[in-house]
Picture (tube, rainbow, N blue to C red):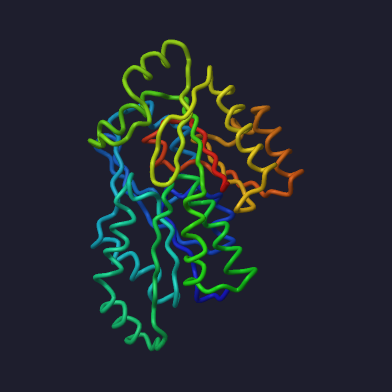
Length: 313
């Protein structure tokens, strides 16, 4: 993989910080607002851990997320990418849940003349090209696509054009499962956004779940999110999704990797016996696993303590 090529993701792409650094992945920020305070989510590991440890979501439920505007994104691309790389592959979270994809694509479209002028002024004669794709998934789903993109670019020396062609059908094979701990966030964030198409948790499910400690299992697939199962308690929910993914591994995966994230200190999820058994099984199958802290942006929408896992069937 040439040093003039890079992968760009939005802050919701749940990959470990060491993986991001080792592979020179560029993170495009998302704004988060908690009360009167506006912050930038750029997957800074220390800030993310502090966010969870200080119980920011417990202190205030007046929280929301906002994508960077197309105009601001153009400036970020100019500063971070245009003069440093010749080709960029952007992999963004599902467009049905966020305007990040549209805003990045618009920024690229309207700013091409400016990008060309900037490179000419800097003595760069090679054409700058950025290709942006909708992952059709969220959190660990885009992260899984990134692992395959890197394999294609590094091991097969593919171009970003051919890599994107390979990734597009794979995006529709990725299933992401989410087990929340705090149902309040999952229920209320869609309402705060005015997103009537979000069917992750309705009022009745919330009331019953809160009373009986029933956790819905949410699936992200082909641009949609919906409840597909339920479990009595968080640990039981983990057992259910790990069983599903283990079966998929045994039957063969389209992408030889598993991506996972947890909205909190990773030592908490690592103590779960179901997690330990799953990771051991994945290792025995020769399937690499990647565990990251869930982005603060995602946690605002699904709540602290949530767990996400993705695989490609």
